[in-house]
Amino acid sequence: MSFNGEILFQIVDKQEFFDRASKDLGFEPTKTISSKKASVLGRTSEQNIWLYKVAYIDEHDLIAKAEGVVDLLLSRKEVIIGLAKMFERVELVLNIRSDLGQIGFYLPSSLMAKLSALGLNVGVDIISFGMASD
View (cartoon, rainbow, N blue to C red):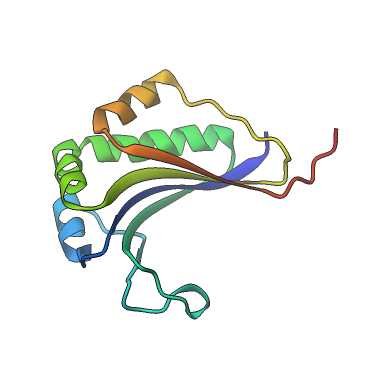
């Protein structure tokens, strides 16, 4: 399979919380989106978003990088649980981009068990350009 993308750990809320999240987690976001500032194409967000983003280049790298992100989060499990109670959304998102019209991948049961232990919602966002032929 030929796809790439990012693994995003994100915290989303209407209140401002960037400094608190960074301090509690013990690491900095790769990006923040403030509801008070214009972002992409001059638009504003209705929410404040704290993002920790890790890029991957293929299916095997997706699993390796996802394991790394989840292990990092597991090392802060109690903090994650606390943040999930304070903010609207605390979640993991798999962004996938591909030229293929059909995309499939598997997540190992060991990774699923770790995700379950964190109690995070997991989203999958797929952008497919559908250029593959039969």
